[in-house]
Image (cartoon, rainbow over all chains, first blue to last red; front, side, top):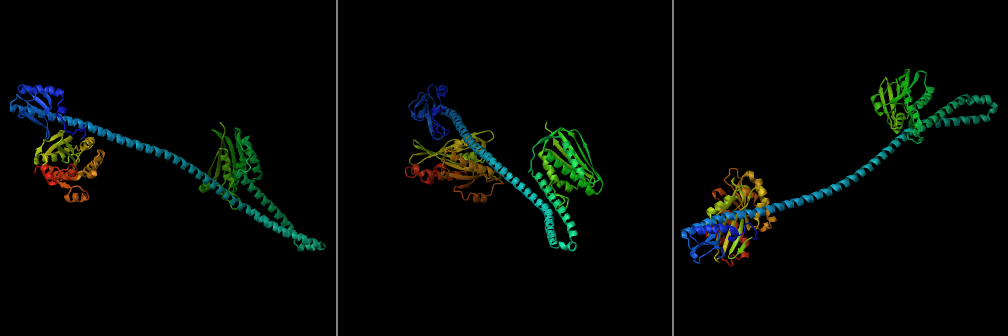
Length: 402
Length: 214
C-alpha cells in the first residue's frame, strides 16, 4: 500500500497534529478533572500524562482496530467513556476529510494523466494528418502533371486527327480533277496516235483527214487541254487553301491599313462578279494594325466569296456590303449579304473544317474554318448573324494595341 | 493489494458500476445484514442528491484460528462519468470487484460503458483484469422493465465471472454477491497468504468468517 494513498490506515498522529492536540488536550483534561493522556497505537504518548493502569486506558477505534488510546488517572469511568466517544467523533470527521482530500489529489493527478494521454494521442494524430496532407499535396501535384501530359497527348491526337481529316478531304477534292485530267490525257494520247497515223497517209490527205475524224479530234483536243488546265488550276487553289489553312507559308507581320486590304480584295472580287451582284464598300478611317496582310486578304476573300455565293444560291440580284470602322478597343469589319442565309444547324457548324453545303468538287469546306483561324491568330473575334432566306452578316473584330 | 501489516491481512474490495446502480445500497445492506466478529461503521460521502462524491467505506473483519486478523475494506466508486479520475484512484490496489449493473432496460448502454471503463481503468492502474476476482451483480430486479433473467444469463453465459441477481433495496442478492466475491478472493490469495496451511482457514470458513456465520 502506498504511503500516501487515500486508503491507507491513518495513524493517530496524522489525524491529530500538534495544533489539534494543543486544542483538544487541555479541553479533555478540564473534563477529566486534571489528567489526560493521548497515546498512539503502539502506546507512545502524544499528549499529556498517561497512568499505567490498563482499565484507565480506552482504545480509539475508527474502523476495526485501535489506532490509539485515551487515558486518564483522574476521570470517572463514565467521563472517560464519554470523552472517548467525543474524540472518536472528532477523529472520524478528521479521517473523512483527510481521505477525501488525498483522494481528490489522486483523482486530479489521474485526470491530468488522462488529459496528457489524450493530448499525446492528439499530437500523434495531428502529426499523422500533417504527414498525410504533405503526401496528398505531392500526389495531387504528380496527378496534375499526369493529367496535363494526358491532355497534351489528347490535344496532339486531336490535331493529328484533324490533319487526317484534312488530308482525307483534300484527297477527295484532288482526286476529282486528277481523275478527269488523267482521262483527258489518255484520250489525248489516242488523238496523237491518230495524228501519227495521218503522217503515213498524207498523200491521201483529204480522205485520211475525214476518215480519222480529225476535225472532231482537233476541237475536242482543245477542249480537253482547257479542261485539264482548269483542273490543274483547281488543284493549285486547293493546295494554296491548304497551305494557308495550315499556316505553312507564314508571312512576316506588317503594319497595315485594313481598308487597303479590303479595297484590294474587292477589286479582285468585282472582276469575277456577275452583273446581277453589286459590291459596295463603306469604309471608315481605321488605325493601322500589326497583322499578316496576306492572311487577312485571304480571310476577306473567303468571306466575300461566301457572300457572293449566298446571293447566287438565292437566285436573285443582290448586294454585298462591306463596312469598316473603329469601335471600343479595336476595329470592326462587317460583310453583309442579302443572299439565302443559313439554317441554325449550318450556323452551328459553319466554322468546322470540311463542313460545306456544296456538292463535292464545289468547295472543300475550309473557307470559314480558315477564316476563323486567321482571326484567332490576330487575337480577334468572328461571329455570324444570319436569317435563312434574308441574308447573312459576318462581323469581324480586331483589337488594336493600347 | 492484499496487505500484511503486523498480525493483520487486509483486502480492498471495490463496488464498481454505472451511476445510481445501487453500489452504496449494497454496502448499507451488508452493514445491516452481516455480523462478523468485527464490523466498523459505514463511512459515506454522499452529496445531497444521493450520489456518491468520493467513495463509501465499510470495514469488516474476523480473526483466523491462527490469530491473524483478516480485514475487508469495502469501497464504492462514484458512478458519474465525470468522476473517472476518482474512480481510478478508488479502484487502485483493489483485490476484488463487484460490478453492480442496473437491470433497467434503458440502462443497458450505461452498463456496457461502465464495464468497459472498468476494464480500461484496471489496465491503467496496473490491475491484472484477467485474474482479478470479479462478481457481476444485476441489481434492481424489482423494476417492471428489468431485462429478463434469461436474456441476461444468455448474454453473460460466455463470461467466466459469477452472475448474481439482486434487489439491493430489499437486501436480496447482496450477501450472495459478497460471498461469491469472497470465494473468488480466497481462491486468488489463499496460497500466497498461506491461509489454509498456516492460518487454518478453509474457503468455507473464510467466507463464513467475513459474513459472520462462523
